[in-house]
Length: 89
Image (tube, rainbow, N blue to C red; front, side):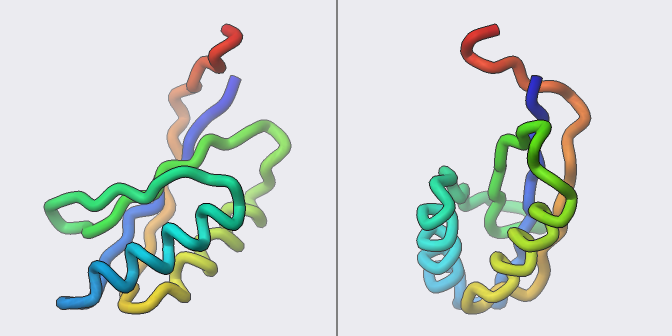
């Protein structure tokens, strides 16, 4: 079974496209999908599946990498404790 971590990203006014491009490039370099642009208190959400092999340090490093994107002012990681069933069951 796998879980997910959601990174809730706030972006400075007028910087959404720059942040989106940087985050997309970062995720692609790690073979990850996303991000999603959303409305509400956060501007971008990144959802990542966690395998049992992924350590908390990996989540911290990914958070730090997202924080380096242009225009990003805040990144909040939220770990889901609801298991995600793999396609193979």
